[in-house]
Length: 161
Image (tube, rainbow, N blue to C red; front, side, top):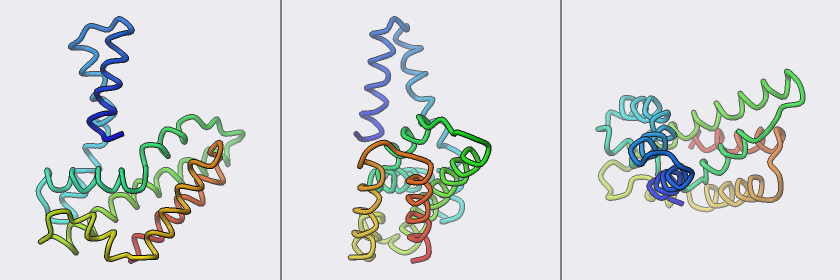
């Protein structure tokens, strides 16, 4: 689902559960509101306006199915302190990679209509292979701390392109 569809689905679910319409809308936006600092950092780092940065940020999110990964990560109950550290590090690494890829797209393909699509195309087979591996890791059964750690490493590898 697109970010807009996810927000609408959440708003509708909250409304059907009895939340007043205005409150349901505000609560549904809370998930996106937590991303504003990352989007602002992406804009500042890339020297881009906030709208272009937001579009790139969400395009990267969609291309790599990051919302699915984030939802799965939130569902993990770490078994011990070190699993919690590994989980935190993996989610932080994925967030940094998302920003890094968005910045690379905005700076390297600024003149194109869709900088993220241009960045993905420029990455060719390497990016396609990593996207396939990420999909297999995050959609091939229950996500675990070890799967999430590998996924974060793959995402991080892409920021070095």
